[in-house]
Image (cartoon, rainbow, N blue to C red):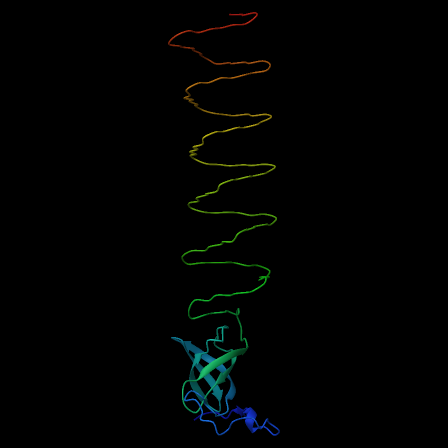
Length: 236
């Protein structure tokens, strides 16, 4: 038993409608001249993509969600649905939420396009992906008062990198660095190293003032010459 519904007459049936409507024209096979019935009901349950609707007067209908109804109907929600004399029943829109968050759900891929600017504003925004999350654009900016990156593995590929920071603290169990040229300008450097090994084809150190080496044991070995030159040399 189909519930009663509110009918909307066609434009040609209204008083004063334009006489140019070609009522005698042969209708298209896909054209349905019957008025559309719109009803209000309450979702009882959702099972395998089908919605059970309490349509009133002890009538329960099984309906599908229309493609344009992006807000997912939940049990207890008041919905707008279409129940024709023949054919499938469709939920057109969610009128009132019973409880819980509102969920926009698409059965297939979903793409949002804007010819201008697209803004997302909320107290908190979380983006989650089961497989991959991508951000791409000619210019990508991330700005905030604080930030945190957490990855099991991170690959950074860039043609140029500029970093400016007041303070940097880093902790790593192992660091491998391969570079063609390295230039550092440091005002004061303090290093605490258990063991340091330097292998170089050539090593030069230029000190403008005092150069001090203090060790429990020190050895200088050369295959050829050892030269010590100075205006005054003190040994012992």
